[in-house]
Length: 540
Image (tube, rainbow, N blue to C red; front, side, top):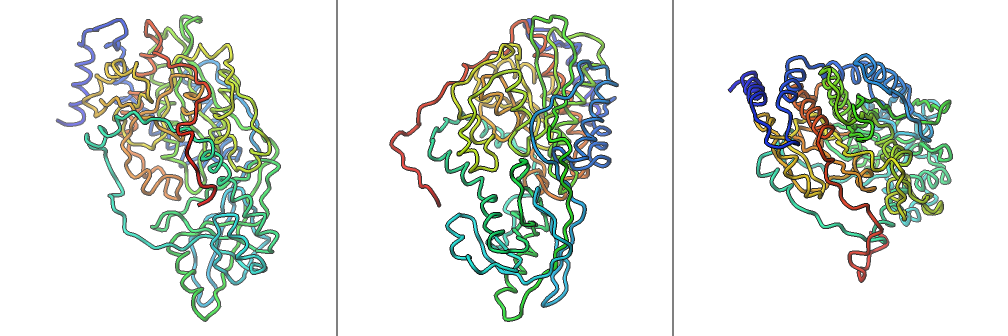
């Protein structure tokens, strides 16, 4: 069956399918959503503008400011209401102006690098000998004390190259999806959590050590082969200003330098990086827009994706794709010309790449609060907001907590939706299966119990909101694209994004119009230790 015939068959099925219950999908609306998104879709134009035209959108960078303005304009043009920015404290913006690194001895060779985010640029061109001084724990400093002055320091273990064991581009098989249907028992271990957040602050302590030792530049090895670089880093807080320029180097180039350093000839490299810090406005912004509901007392449902990205490339798969799908769902629903019962809210988050800061700020303002973390603990971590926020008790609900009936998130690249994670909420399994039924022929049918981590629905769940992430085909997201310098429009799949947009729109419409809201779990309370007799190593 051709793709066009399959879509026509789905339209015909949706148009004739009888409603089995009051909360079953509205067949006529579903058919209109599919027609609008598949045959008249604009998702690719949206994501192309975000990526090719605006580019990588580091929070509080000029590119992110441009994206905030442009996305608001699109929401308004589509007829959404209450379009506005919600600001929260963040820190400095940062952007790359130039990065040139080459080996100058024992031969001349350009090297593939990217400045590490929120590190300073070099004071002009710096040429110096290298020293391979791997450091990943505080106790490693003692080995290199007194040896780094005037050097360019390679701080990673070179490691070994390895051939990939899996194809770089993948679609999920039914067997792989079935493995996701498992209830993962939570593990509460306060000592392990403390180790995690302390470890996350190592880069800050490394910077201080290198400055004290007189190092000129530090170089880390990219964590993937294939010439890929990403440049993730921290230091965005106004009181956390890194002192030593840092670059991440392609793994193959890094290993070459490390091998040469074992020889008799001196190895020198030349580094010239220029970056800009943006401090005029230290508040970041979430973009919010609504399709107003007909019943103001019925609450609202919500979709979100993070608009911010890293800047190695254009932030296409992560997460221009998710942002464009959320925007396209808004456009599709607005074009129907009918009002949902509940308001449908759309959010494009900032600061996700740092510590889910934008969605956390929304929660603190509208849904629930927690006591602040101990400042002494927070100082140990680059991402204290991520590691400590959900561990602060008690949880205090705001009056608006009950108003948010469901949240749907998209943040796993441009792969087609294959189903949805219930995130451990067994009460929605039958409902979601019903909502997916019109899209089974498009490859979306799975409802699985697993929880997912690492993106903006996580803190929603942590305060008791029914919040969900969709299952997506991985494509080459984790293998090559995620955070890397090839995260561009070329790695997006148009058919997949159109499919994802109509499913997102359909889920939002269904959630906004159910007679009863989706089942909620209990409001979280402080958990007991999973194994009160466990011993956790302080350092590995």
